Length: 107
Image (cartoon, rainbow, N blue to C red; front, side, top):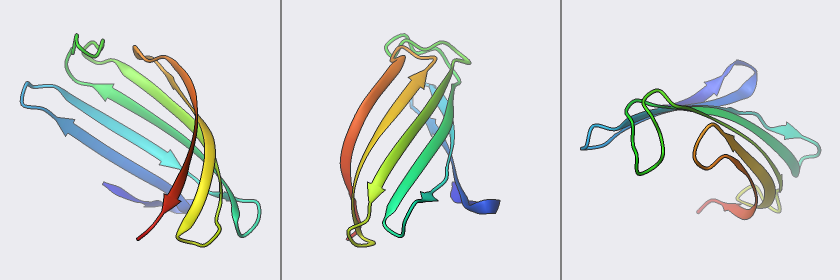
């Protein structure tokens, strides 16, 4: 599910299930801060909860992972925007952060 909460917070809720009985619930929210009409900073906060232990991925039943991030994008046009950012994850086998860059586009 995805939608817009009051004060224009974008929220997402995702549930994943596998044939082997593994399940996870992911909740996240983001907000767009406009510095100008084209320069936009997007902070994001999310949490993932695992329902069953998965030794291949290094998770136990009930493990919780916190995701945070910032993305700064410049909209050349509304449908074309390069961005750069940083994401950080805590509470999993992949504990740590990473820099990113990309291109957001619509078609």
